[in-house]
Length: 146
Image (tube, rainbow, N blue to C red; front, top):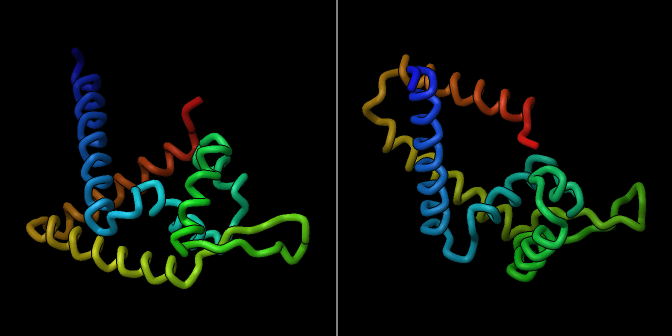
């Protein structure tokens, strides 16, 4: 195995561990919401609302999967539907007040967790790590998997 192959294998293994930890952390922060639910809420906040079909396209998910997630979030009072002012036939999903509050609390909690986990890292290491994560995510967005 080449050094490059070993590095790529290590990256894959570590990103998988990171994803598992993120799911577990999300479950501890709010037992009713999965990591998927948190990401949907964050996307709605970032986009200031969007249609369910836009969520399905963004996350490369089946419409029925998104529909179930949206229905659960709506039932729990995290999101609400509003008529699109430019096209009254379309409903746009927005965060409800409960969703806004939950995301804010989650953001504070996540920040505290990251501050604690990275407390021993020096400024240069933190800057390099942040730069690499931004670069990786930009490359991943530019070259989505088929």
